[in-house]
Image (cartoon, rainbow, N blue to C red; front, side, top):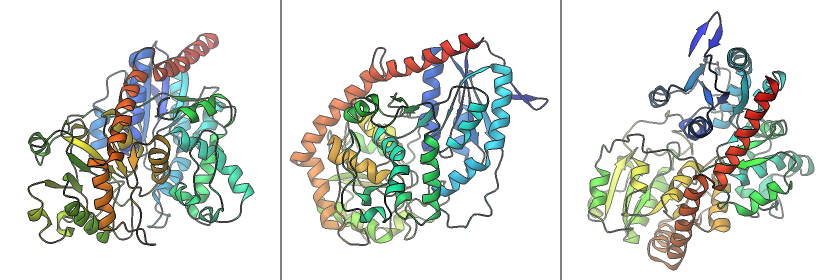
Length: 480
């Protein structure tokens, strides 16, 4: 997008929407899918704002591949040098978005002058930018890249903070929110684990900022969370509308198969392989890597395991690609690969996840409970073992296991959170050949069909997005 005399130049007769994504491909990918829906199905043009901080070659290539009707603007680098080196990811993102407000204001003012913006859609980490939209009288919805249950929790968090004083894991009863699965304090979002921490203060600030939004768009769909969706429609979580417009999942994006995962899968029986990957950011402890390996061996099941370098200090050590770069394979038990070579395949660091989930040999997915991976699994009809590590993953796991019933959750064997090999073997066998796995496989196949129907013309997600699009088009006509 060109800058002339300090102004963004992109005059276009189509109604124009500005979107702001927080850092990380896990946020950018679903937002781009949302942008494409507004552009392809409802005739908008769009500008996507991203952050220079934490950008990567993958992000740059991805943004360069956007169609011409979607422009992108990069917010200049923001100094975070004053933050402690061990600051949480969420703290770093919150501080970044807060300090970027003047830059976002400048871009939005310029876009509004040249394009007459009809709406502004910031990521849920960016409610500090909502006052800019109010100043410019631009309609604005927050885009929540996760689920309705998470949004319900965040909207309730300020009240919970005001009415309780103990650490949330010490609450004597689970939290009962309308339409949601009861949630014990130990399964609250990771930044709420310690109310005295800096990251909790920032997350509470985010939650309070949600109250300024006109409404919410979410990467979920009606059949995934029917009771929670109904509670929002009935106003039980406040007056702001919440539109489930997903699922937004990535295509294979031309993913390369560097280690030959797909040819190996071609040789396996249908629905026989457990795919194991803890997301692009998730890291396990060294002891836990070994327990998983021994548990896999004990289970006797076929597996395809993406092993990443472990960390005994960080559960999200590779979130921005900043983790250690030594060989992850070296952390496996001695002789493990040789002993399991007839039934298993181990690849270091990365594999083409979407293509693997879409393969007929894949019968289960052991994942970290991240929402993007969850929706990819649902969209390909694959039941799960959800093993939460950070962010809202514990909450997601409760939803998937106790609410929807499409995932198993391993039981932690120690106070330090380690899941022992016997439990690993048990839960894997249960998913791949047990009664619970059979039931979950049937349920996730139903949700796979429901997800496809939701996005089709006339489906619930399509209609929800159409309602928002028509509202913004109408507002644009009135203001002309």
